[in-house]
Length: 124
Image 1 (cartoon, rainbow, N blue to C red):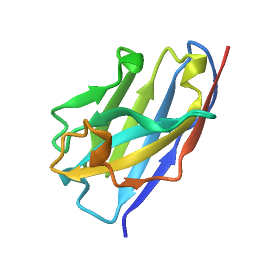
Image 2: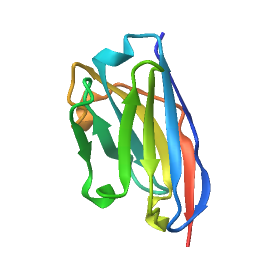
Image 3: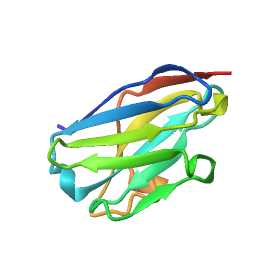
Image 4: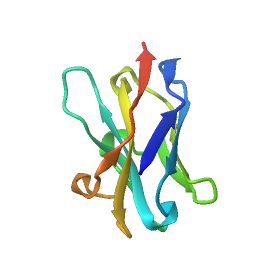
């Protein structure tokens, strides 16, 4: 059974940083694209950032470019989201997501499993 468990959310002031982690179990992690989605209050969730199965390619939405970084540690079956220069509009529940086997991680429709989510709140 595939499991994705996020950690690392919390409350931070604008301009601060947080690192989210997502531990994955139940499959050959190194063969799968991974990503992070977020859902702000009253809004639909959408993909924020993705990394290909090989780690060679990453995809970012425009609003987080230069501030957020995704990485993966295949030895630990873990994907990370480093968030710097956080803004109040980054406030959302962040979900780790499992992409397609040998996928790019670029497209929302590639993803089919999500974690339970972790709250990130950025105060102004």
